Structures are given as C-alpha cells and as structure tokens.
Image (cartoon, rainbow, N blue to C red):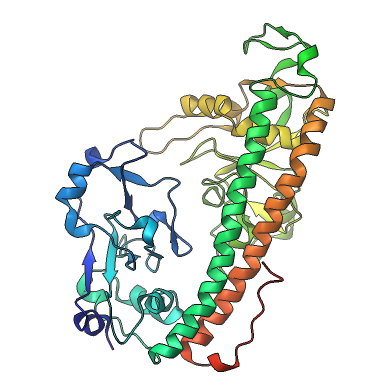
Length: 423
C-alpha cells in the first residue's frame, strides 16, 4: 500500500514542517528550556540528537501548533540528506517539526505499526525510492505529496511485532551504551577541570600559586606557547565514500559533536600508498577542525587504518613534557576554545589557520602530574572506546538483519538471537 493509503485509513497524515516564511532565524532563542525544533541535522542514526538543536519560545510554538510532534510520530528529512529519519518518543512529544523536516503520523493504523514503518523507512528500498523521487538541481527536496506515494511493503501485524521486537532489542542495547558513553565522557572532562582548571590535583595543598601571563598557576608549572610544543600538519583532500575503497577518512563532521571518534561511522577514501603513509593516523594524534566548526578537537585512541581530511590540522607533541591526552583535554577546554573562536575569521564560513591555532600559551604541568592524570583517565576513555566498538557491532548486526527481516528473507520464527554477550 502507499503511505497515503495507510495514513488515510487511520486519520494519520504526512505534513511538511514550517517554511522559512513561517519560521525565521529571529524566532530562535538561547533558552535551554525552550521547545526544541527538529531539523534534518538533528536526526542521528534514527534518534533526535540535541547537541546543537535550535529552540523556540512558547509563543512561536503555539503559532505553529500544527507542526507539533506527538509520541509515535516519525520525522523525515525532506531536503538535503534524503533518508534521514528519527523516532519521536515520549521525551520528544511536544517538540516542533522544523524547516526541512516532515512529520509522518500513523495514529492507530490497523494495518501497519508506526514502529515498523520507522524501520521500513531505513531500508535501501525506501531510501532509494525517496532519493529517486526527490527534485532539485542544487539540493534535493521532497514534498508531502511525493512521500505519500511511497510504496510500503508489510507482513501481518503479528509478524511486524516480532520484527520490531528484534530490532528494538538492538536499539535498546545501543542506546544504553550511548548513555554510558556520555557519563564516562563527562567523568573524564570533570577530572581534567578539577586538576588543571581549579588546580585541585593530587598534592595541590603543598604547592603555592604564582603569577603567570595566564593568571595564577601552581609553582613549578609553566605557561608555554602551544607552537613550541607541537608540530602541525594539514590533511588530505579527497571525496569520502561509503564503500571500503581505502582507509577510513576522518573529517570534521566525524568529530564536531563529541569528544570521541566513532570509527565505525567514519567513511573511506581512495589514496595512493605514498599519501597513505604521509597522512596515516596514529594513536595519540590530536586533530583540530580548521573550517566550518573551527576549534573542535578529536583524538585517536586506538589502532585504526585511517587518514585525515584537509579541513583538519594534526597536532603532534614534539616536546617530551607534553603528553597527548593532556594536549587533547587542554585544547578541548573553554580557555583554548574561546581563543580559537575569537581568532577565527570569515564572514560566511569561519576558519582558523594552523599557525593561529598554535599561538596561544597553555599551562604546562610537570610531566609526573600529567602522567598521573593519564593513568587516571586512560581506563575511563578505554571504557568509552570499548562501548563505541560494542555499538559498532550492534549497528552492523542491525544493518544486516533489517533488510532480511523486512523482505521476509529471514523467517522470524527461526530467530534465536542472543545479544547479551555483545551488551
């Protein structure tokens, strides 16, 4: 049946979000408690990510009430990255379907479960159909009328429930790991701030603060220009590909929303042997984005076959007094981030050069204090890396099962999955 036939039989609908003439840039507010607006960029691996989500006040929300989301809705990207979609749960009920997005509501359809449709929209068949029917020379667009014609294949409701149960079990494990990742990520960051911002490191009571050009710092510590401690290198220019045509190709978008790199989600690129050796990523390499999101920082924490893109600058310590983890956390902290933001140039796209990003002085503790810090945070970051790898396995299992379950190639009555070892 078409999506229009399914929504028509249960009072559901397919509705595009507000157009630019209805929702202006001036309508967005900085209030963290205001109503989030779900744009295509906020749809991440089937969920709504709030890291950089825009928000509106109650008055604007009430004016656009026909675009308010309810639990059980599906939001779909209608322009740009066609095929992105996210589930609206209880926590997201009352949020707004944003510009560039589309809301799909099945209500209580007797033929198809909304959760089944959510998974169906991730299949190659559905994504391919949507991409094939999008229009636009510079940016692909979908209208509600086109999306309503999407053909939806489905088994009986009982079989849908089994399929959803299998895929939901993987989703729950993945989400649980993701929340644990957020917790351990914050733990490491707070330890850094306790030791090196508030100077409450082990033994701090026996060390006096002395003046420096960065303000008071512990006696015996130094304020050293970053340029004296690291070398810089711009990355490799190539187009990213989803197929494994070469090594992983680390880009700014792979590290601009978190303090870690999820290598399982990083695409690939073709590259010559000579360039591969030159731009090879090593454990301990620290990367800083120089364009679009200048200053955002990432670190390689495990062995990986990868190179890095030209929008990134690689920082490598050349002074034995500077340890990579300390460099990573220092360049991630507010003082350095504020410097890069202030030093960035460009009216439409902000950027910062390698020379400028290494000009500011940084606080350099004695190496034994840095070593204690690394000894403390390395197990925490190691747990984070393990959780990321587990989620990579779970995602691969989901992507393998999804088309076979939806197509009926895999008989749900034969399923005997044990996901606990992965969890």
